[in-house]
Image (cartoon, one colour):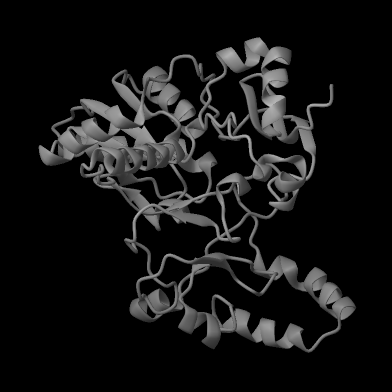
Length: 351
């Protein structure tokens, strides 16, 4: 039988990371074909579709541009972590809390102002700059590879502020739960912190909890649970994106600020100078005045390349790209890294 599965599957010694979509009528056949996989898997998103309607047909799924094919790849790691201190046993990574229990525990921690319990947002900084849980300590990294060193610094700072004591417990979360598996394993196996609690299914699953709470509140005419996550949830996966944006509103709170002017802003964009392509938050006014660029220098390049033909544009970018994207001095490869340029506003303040 043709299951008509679309998506991507990454296979490594750590496990399998799969994002799949298929028509609802074929789900039973998928379960029959892979019973052990679906029974034992950690379903972070839990998205086995059960709605039998037109939007879940093969044509509809392709039209949504979620996935256009089934892509299967062999990888060294499910999530590249840059960890070089040894092996991480992902079976020993702490306790996974359902969203309701996570919510209650975090609510109690915040109400008691319990700073002996450390709440970690283990996402990259551009993710949590637009949305995060109340009371969370933000790990300020560009890529997950830098997370473990950043965690060491946070723990050292915590111990310095608490007479050398380690956190009583650590609560952590990420988008879908996978990064927490590695950080939880690191805390348990290398930092001696065994009281680790992870938000099962991450922010995505917490959003489902909120939606279910709203539905139950409407039916019972009660007050819905108030979200402890404020702002937007940054997502990489097209399954969670609507209208082409890169984040999903959880609450109306605007936590970020425009890269150029500092006004409240939760809208990410990439610099229109494709040789830079730096990811920034940019308000509508600055997007217009900078022509979508992140700086005056990039604005000049955008205007210059706007006068070129397509072929001239390609040649020019190829000749000058190395000037705009510095290489990562810690990288073992020669690939360029994404980077955040220095804010012109901060440059002016530091001058």
